[in-house]
Length: 368
Ligand code: SF4
Ligand code: FES
Image (cartoon, rainbow, N blue to C red; front, side, top):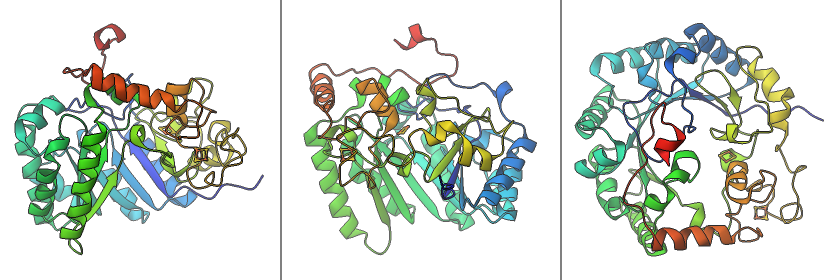
């Protein structure tokens, strides 16, 4: 078996701590506490190992990565090793001093997330009063610092009507790019699916808005758009394929092929505390398990798209079809595709008006 090509990106999930509590957070349901987080020295070593392995980009994320005091030091190491660095942040802890330190350390790009364009709704979704003004201030600081800026909007049934205002906000801040991503229904998103899943009519209106905005802002602002699997006919290549493009390191140092991989209980994910990133990438059975096409059953095995979408998402296959080795139910060729239609009908018939907020230490009973 030949060695896999190196990953393009390292997703460095520095911490699960975050002042916001978005009900679609991509972090696992069991969040890590600060006491279990990797030390600065560990992250510095991991960044060096990533560069040695051939990684090109590091995405500093969380939780809220600016909650780590050592962030400028980590960015400086990334710059020293010529890794392109992207800060994925809610912006609520970003002040002039911290941004100055990050710029000085060599930060290349900021991706700033918004919960909505309208303040009251945004703060209800994020579960933090006063957050929106802090985000506006953070966007202005990033502009003043001259860093490239992407605004990220996660959209769903409760905010999709304000998509035009979100795009206008991107233009107001002269963002180079805005990313409009429908909620992905894993983890917290799946718990909150009945409150968040949009109707077909909402999705179609959003897609038309994006198409028109792309024309209107052509040459000035790029608009990325991620549609929800539930209304799709074919799945997305989740993470660009398992163990192909990204390696994700959790706050405690577990190396994963995707942020939700720990839901796949039969796999043993190695730690960067005890193995090098290169060894994990090349030799870990967990990374090998769904890499490429050898693991596939029908209908993926003989499908002409098998090296395009890599069978979709393993975590979604487990969550909705009960087996991570099955075709992603987002695919219309999957025998389990009907579960997607059933979820859409259920969300339309019994929409929830309440969010289950993401927070550290929430017990299963509290979440139910
Ligand atoms: Fe992709 Fe498998 Fe569906 Fe083909 S059958 S489109 S490879 S998920
Ligand atoms: Fe794990 Fe898609 S989120 S493979």
